[in-house]
Image (cartoon, rainbow, N blue to C red; front, top):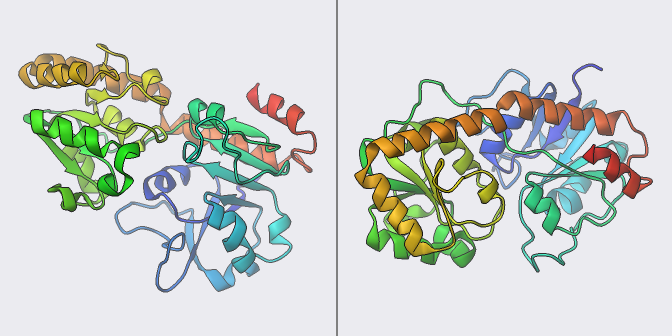
Length: 331
């Protein structure tokens, strides 16, 4: 099978910069004002030659093979605005980045379609969502970073990278951040972080070299998907301090590549140990990098996505028997 022609809206820039590593021709719809989903190629990322911007009004003329949705707006609004009737019948994937925002176990996924492959990014997310009739698979994160960016940890501080921390409140751990930042030297980066005295929204290419100078990476988030920023910090070689929630305990081993617990006093002690013991921080960071290279390699990630493309393109009527399809996907 040749490289498929895939349409995907620009929703999460970092994730998009990695998924385009899969063997495919990637088309990004754009609008002049660059509203949500129509930002095209972000200026802060490097894009390979297989990524193309297409004016939204010209999408109907594209010889597409596959459409990837990432938000309810993509699925329930955008596709009816920019896709032709024929394109709306193409094989389709819904990429779900998040944990359920409603009840943690009883929330039905908004897409309940046996002909749409639902891709979750962690096994925790897949476990918690009620995915209805959708066949489901899990594709864990993959990252590709500049090998020249390596952990040094010379700054005796921790760094937190969360977008909209105050606005997202307890879900993102705003109160945890406030408590810890009063006790331990921490810097905050991410969109809207200036409101909390933070460093602001730093371009991706500059953020990782900056992070690598900090002693550790702290993730205060209570209940979202596994942060891609945490995986990137591991790949750089940083020790991680994090709450033991969602998928995190499968990625961060307590006392192995950092400290993970729901006991905030214990996490504070771990941070202070890393600040006072640079050698231990380097050892834990090295283990982080080893885990990231084994579990989150961009090569594995690209292969997983290519298999997902083959799954939906090679199986007409995907999901007519959702239970059977789901079982097949798990093999």
